[in-house]
Length: 327
View 1 (cartoon, rainbow, N blue to C red):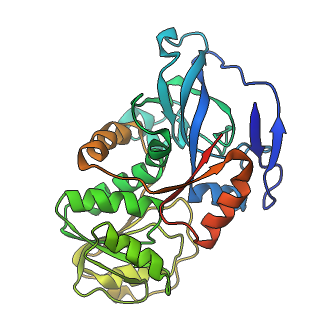
View 2: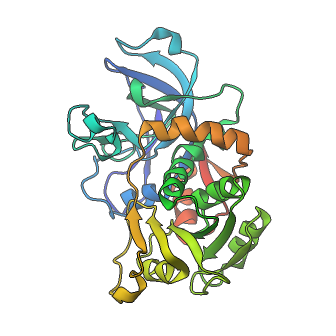
View 3: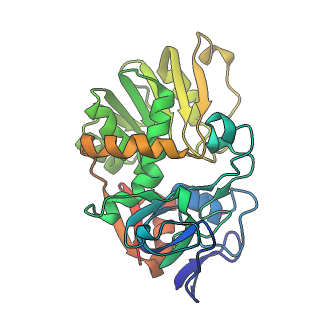
């Protein structure tokens, strides 16, 4: 197996060669076809998230072919395509697991964070947390759906049914869920980094009704806003942009500190909520929607050895859509 490994926080990944991992009972092994690069991977590598497993193979938007299974796993899964997301295992026993909120499990494992992920040629995963995927679809197009797509879908559900939706940070997640919003008949207002005209053009090319810098107020009050950029200063900006009774959804796992803000921008029953970790039923809902909506994933591919370059391009905002590693 070849893999790109994080040995110390804040340092570049290093390539290793080693034996292929062996699936334990209840696990399967994938020969990886594609692994998308997520902003959460940046938060792990840069040390924004506490206590990752080290050394660690990052990556949690994995698509591959099952080539081995451990005991207790149906051997007919060998040869099938599967996807492995961020939530890699739950305890099944805590109050959250017992009340259909497994994404809030007290004792979870996360792919590419507390267990090895997909910046590699092979990965082992809990078979119950590996989704069956179409054998006919493009693996490069599928990979970003496993987190960027799913976090966008969960955020959109949290945002409610309003017609006018603001998306702050027009990267991998926003470009996917914008297409779903437009298919649903909603109006998309895209907010980008100041000066990022290319991202604004990209949003408009996908059908957004309006696109501008994040410090520009929208033309009309929003019904809801989703913040994908990990920038706490966007929270008060989004609250000011939504109407009375509107909702702001924070869609990231990490965000810089939210600055002090006047109560008046939260008043009038505006709501501020977050999403976390994505339960398996989100995938059951989202993948059929993405297919029917005709979502087109825009990707830049990199060979596995260039994982550091992909992370750097994502960190610097040089990408339109998603970055995907292809072993």
